[in-house]
Length: 440
Image (cartoon, rainbow, N blue to C red; front, side, top):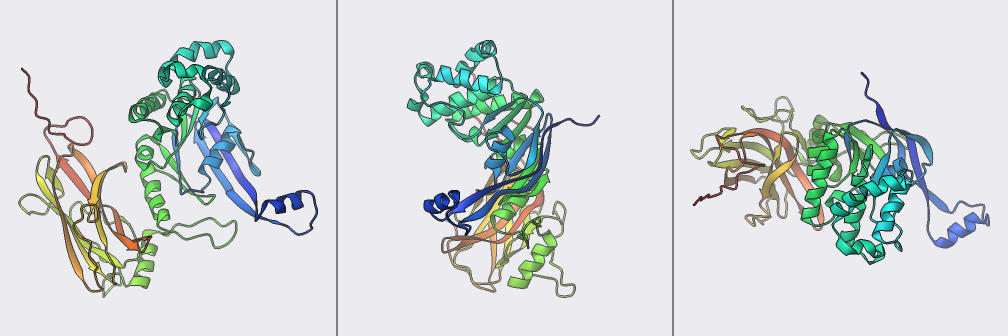
């Protein structure tokens, strides 16, 4: 049986006219000049997407990519310059703070106002009122004008309305990261309930761990263009490339951005920085061994190259399986290809789905803040006790640094090693707090 489409976005464009000064807008509006006084800026450029009923979809991208704009067009807050949007289902949307609220009304009045706008009758809203008030938990403030609310109280009420009217489609723009830690936990619990109920959820967030944990698919936008969509882990890895400029811009207007693949990135880095390549074949050397990923995602300008990486147990034996509670060491050998003021050596441990659990670097630990020079070779070790729960994890490595105030990526290797934690006792969550328990 074919999946039913909940939201379909077809060839949507959103254009704004940018003016150098307010007077140019007035002159052009009154037709006082034949000369065009604005510059056309496309916030969205021919975006297409299909979201099926029951899916949880995340939209990620750098600031100014058009994430919030596409949500506003889907919800009807904005009209597209071109293209069409079809929605099948009742939408509840939580966009930026204040959207859909009258600041002069009190909380109760705004609940009825929002419910009516979504399409509920007064009786239906009344039936949901107590659930909304209990979820918001702002006490007597609900009878005061919302203009007197703190930002925390405001978002509590807004989210309580959006989440408790049982929409068919829930659209959330960064709202889950607002409010105190207890309210955030309550929001995520409700969010998980929605997923179990088979609701369609569309969310925008900079919290990549939440995107990896909750989303079935992820859509990646950049400067108004749709760069890709697919598995959360894959899209998050690509997004990290975008953040450091490791993708090829469109060559002409209307062209689709084309991401460099791993080989192109390696060749480009080697061309500009003399990456470590096999002298006979010209191909980049790839570490070999059990648990090593030959297709690890890598990029960077290769001012430094991660030449070798591995794990040893508490007996200094190389392994990719570590006993829970055991001390283990992560090793990196880095070749310096050009002078660097102060490189930062790092590792990260992620779940198979891509959620970052832990990691550290030499800058955070204040263990190495020195310059290095072309031709140097640095051996870095990170030694710690294994407190993660038993299971499969992925280990990533990085060498980065700062050139003045500019952050630079010299070499990154994502998901380079499969780390297996062997345990005969798993507690709740990702790691063991090693509690000492007494019962008297």
